[in-house]
Image (cartoon, rainbow, N blue to C red; front, top):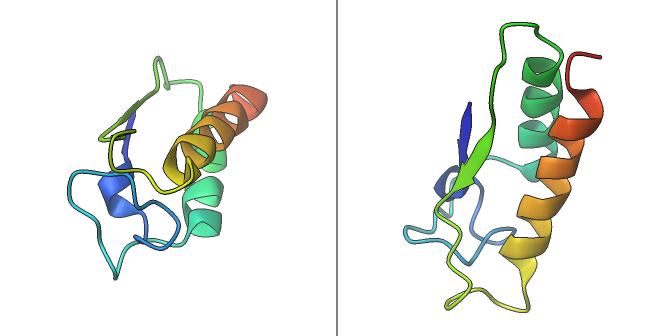
Length: 77
């Protein structure tokens, strides 16, 4: 499973290649990832489209790290 951070609302994830003002709320993304991580057919997880060069105050980097930790925490729970 790949999380493309371009899909997250730009106010929460400004450090991406294609910011989306109408993107998903981070809480919604967290719920989707937690649900998917509990499934036994999930074999891998990665995050794409984080660009530290355009990130504002490391917001996107911190959010990506938090979401990765959520997947690890819920993995095959």
